[in-house]
Image (cartoon, rainbow, N blue to C red; front, side):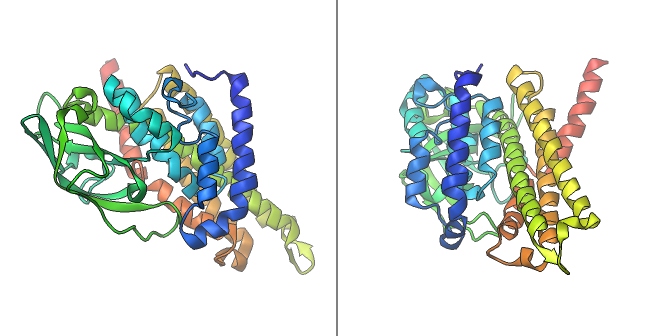
Length: 387
């Protein structure tokens, strides 16, 4: 159950919408050109609680559940995706590992600072040889007296350049019958042997910083093992990722809505031969496909979030929502560029940025291919169990 009633949630949603559309949308060009979120926008985001909206109230967050989280995600998607990325790891994949699997001491030590934005938490799972499927993980953690010593390389780690805490996945033994051998550790950014590499240069999502992170003889006390349990790691990763997938689906819907709005506004005003292009049936057909995708995606996200919160489906649904909504957003963005014609290919036009930004949604937190395997494999397993 959410700590926030439906009635109390409405002003929060309105505030976020006003912030996104009134404060962030007008500065998208600035964010893109500087490859950074301006400090004043970061401060405002922290003031309205965006660094901890999904962290429970007892640790200073807003305590929103996933049905409310996705409503915010659809608002965040309406502007530069770097905004959401700035506080996304605190509320999502990194923060949720602590909320769901941390010990009382670990929660007390970190969650309040994560909720206020004083600490940015990074989720360090992906490696050069292990992406959407964590089973291929190579980073090692070896027990040494009262400590663990971590060695390995991570890549594409969101918020690594500004993180104060890394939630690090490492193998403590080869996978065996008793489990995957993957544990999770809390590693403060200033721990000796932890190095953050040069910021990645990406196709899009300017202002959303990712970087490689290396661990060389990084020593942490046993109290930094998440949940005090060596086998919590894989479960923590899968649980956080499943929840995150529904959030990303919501984000994709918000971005698709923005691309649709830009397309409609352009089609209604731009002319060819003196006629607004929106009068042409082939342009109307493209708008119709965009609108249908957005409506279907929004309904799917809301239903999936509801079933996740009730516990009915926390595996197949999240993958289906992420698969459909991120693929849909890619098609809607592509049509938006097409409707804009040559101007849609120009750097300072919002649909050009959106076209590049949404491409990443089909790759991170599990590629579309991985989602198809989860969905298909899950359906077969469910059927076999039923027999």
